[in-house]
Amino acid sequence: MLRLADLRENPEAWILRLKKRGLDAEGLVNHVLQLDRQHREVLQKKELQQAELNSLSKQIGEFIREGNQDQAEAAKQKTASLKGEIPALAKQAESLEAEIRSCLLGIPNAPHASVPAGLDASSNEVVRVHEAARSIWEKAEPHWDLVAKKKWIDFEAGVKVTGAGFPVYWAGAARLQRALIQYFLDFNTKRGYTEVQVPFMVNEDSGFGTGQLPDKEGQMYHVPEDGFYLIPTAEVPVTNLFRDTILDESALPVKCTAYSPCFRREAGSYGKDVRGLNRLHQFDKVEIVQICHPKDSYDALEGMVLHVEDLIKSLELPYRLLKLCGGDMGFASALTYDFEVYSGAQQRWLEVSSVSNFETFQANRLMLRFRGSEGKPQLAHTLNGSSLALPRILAAILEHHQVEEGVRVPAVLRPYTGFDVLK
Image (cartoon, rainbow, N blue to C red; front, side):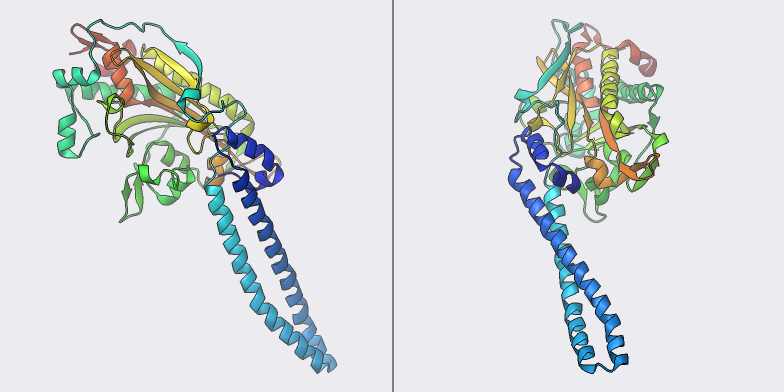
């Protein structure tokens, strides 16, 4: 959530930044500032009336002691009037504060200065492309045909048990899936991230804290009896571990990694974009999260990008790195990089990771702060990245590493799978 103090200080700058999302925010920002002025005027009036009430209350006793009954009675009538007006002003201030908060909740994060302007993915900026070993076996098949023929992944069984988008993995494919999760966690922990195991359901406050609620309420699976939501990513519970927390500056950065299943009501249900593993309602992912000092967060973001890049390289897959334009970024992000791996069998790029800096947007909702040498708590910056999302990585491995006898397992995964080729 954007901070009201920032909008007050320089509204034009925030309006300009939001334009990169294709959002004409001038009317909304001006409306918020007008409500803010009204709110402060009401509070000032309330404070003045409270001060007058306190003063009159003292004067009444003095008037009585001095025998000034008329003045005492007039003061009593005035205090009675003020006692009726002050609660009304308090209620008006509370209503204005709620309206301001509601308006702020509807404003997405303002893009960083380096974010390209644009409305959709066509305006994303290609930062670099890694083409190593992009060529594939000439007889390579799309993964959905391969796994059906080999009986590695059963999409129909998932439909029977649950519904579309909930696949069942068998034998070697299940082992490969587990190997990827363990390898990703080990890769992250060796680079300084602390592994944490978190709940796979969160309460409404947690969804609100990281920006999923109310923005993505329709995309989350909800358990209404308990008020819980199945998580769309481990970012939500991990970041919320630090909600309502004041960290010591010396503890920064905090670096966590976590595995979780992820649950999403993905839009769309037809065509190659959703076939096979390309888009699922339940999938596995390993996440990295950092909580940083504001002055360090963009260096941390670049470090996270290089971290994910090394991870993808180790899987021997061709990939490209994109900087997302304003219109293609998530609601809470100030700057996002996407990694895509190339699927030769499908002849298309598949997104496998997003790495984002949210600046203070999430921390303001979470009241996630740190205390420095000056003693005053400040909002931290939060960052997260997929390291990595499994379905499309697995699809790319199945397609890119196909050989005559099956699928060649990348060398870094063989100690985890126990086999060199998935047959």
